[in-house]
Length: 101
Ligand SMILES: [Zn+2]
Image (cartoon, rainbow, N blue to C red; front, side, top):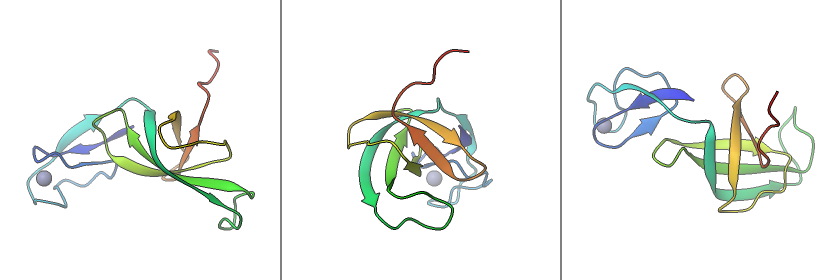
């Protein structure tokens, strides 16, 4: 996952030239597409385009990266390690590591 990171500690997957928190110029950053689940909420009625039940999670990317919202069909819990897949601005996370191709 690519994004921006500021000296103040703010990290975001958005490609903004300046830090939204302190206004300083943020530098390019890249993180591994793995993370730890911080929050998980199972939704019985997800938005259009998703099959129920879906779980909405907040994932901390690669230890020090941004915290992003991810959708998953997997049964994840807080503390689980997940793989994050960028679906064009929407993030999906998977509990199991993908098999090597
Ligand atoms: Zn900043």
